[in-house]
Amino acid sequence: MIGTILNDRYEILEKIGEDDIIEIYKARCYKLDRYDTIKILKKNYMDNPFIIEDFKREAAELAKLSNANIVNVYDVVYQGDINYMVMEYVIGKSLKELIIENVKLSYERSINIAVQIAKALDCAHKNNITHRAIRPENILITEGGTVKVTNFSIKKVDKDSTSTNSHEFTRIMRYYSPEQVENNPVDARADIYSLGIVMYEMVTGKLPFNDENPAKIRNKIHQELAIEPIQLNSNIPLILNNIIKKCIEKDPNNRCNNASEILIDLLSLQNNIDYQVVSKPVQKDHTQVMPPISLPKAQRENFKARQVKKVNKSKVNDKTKSYLLYTLMGIMVLIVGIVAVMSISGLDTSNKDESNKVKTILVPNVAEKSREDAKKAIKGAGFVYREITENSYDVEEGVVIATNPEIGTSAKQGTTIEVIVSSGPPRKTVPNLIGKYESEAKEIVPQNGFRIGKTKYIRDGRFVRYHVVDQTPKPGEELEEGGVITYTVNLQ
Image 1 (cartoon, rainbow, N blue to C red):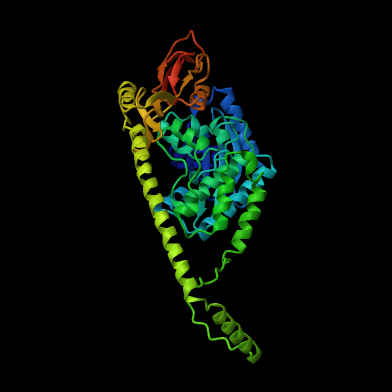
Image 2: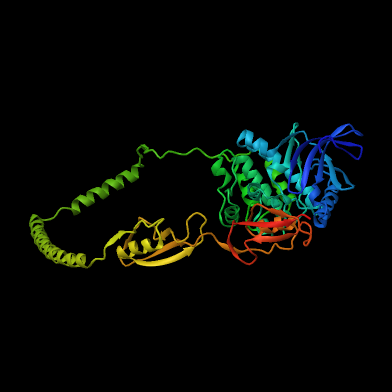
């Protein structure tokens, strides 16, 4: 393709990217003497009416958008067997490259970039367009610092997610909202979620839900709470931390409804970037010496009179004092005797209680043991064994994950110990791919939580071209989530 001149106008200079159905090239426009980006539909999809229709619709939708933070679409051309879009060529770097170079960005720069992304999304949302693929690779930064959002995905599922490269799909999935992961209908709030993940990555250099297994990422997106960004980077403002938290709420109803709302929050923060809560200095509680109080003369005289009265009342007869003293001594002797008797009696009782006391021992360490070995250990220690099964990607089926009460804690003999045993990864029903176009199969497999294996190709005139004619495992069989499905496609 390099060196090809399209429409007597665009010379293809170099390939700068691709996804599953599109090849992206840098080209020179001779008519306007400028560099452009050309997105060309791959030839092996030219006979797929679904892909062609989607390509045309995407181009038409993007042509409606006019915003300084969105890559412009200049032209859409259908020339024989070549369909392509002519777009603005951006000189600069992707946001992903910036994050990799800097590990993480300053919160001031992150806010500035987030504001520009939000402006781009605001334009799209006002035109009833959802990007569906907001991630650092699709955000370009010009040499002057202007943000350009590109690679809108008008399809229900991001085209990149159909890639046969499972590593690529896993990388993309980390930015998906919970509703996208389940392939449910999405709206502007899905873009808000993805923007929140991008902001999280900018200020922390990390992704909140990260793993190499797409099924594990899916579970984390649905079940785990993200570590707050401020815990990973204490330099960011609390307000920014809270904005990010709101963006990545799992329930779309708890997020901003569209980019206009998040833009208000970000602009307010940007305009008050120096605002800080000033804490009062901590007061130390030292003991202080107070000056003596000087009483008025009348009060001093009254105080003296009360003191004299107390002394007079305290004088008693010596015989009365002696009588009281002997009486008190007798009472003391009586009390001592009673206490001694009670102590001896209590000692006997405590010895009896001790002999009947149930022993408290530690819960045995049965982690990573088989259910049979765990059962023997638990019962052998005098506990009651109760088994609970739980799906796990990390622990082999039939092996203990944990116990309740926890291993190593104290419990009385006879206590029921719940032993959590792995039932392996969750299993799902394999979808039917036979009779589907290859492009459809590439969507269906990851949507159902599986990975695509090595695709086989045949040439057989009995079947429709580009249709799936066979698959392994067969439709309807059970396969662990994240498992591999391979299929055969007819090319004739």
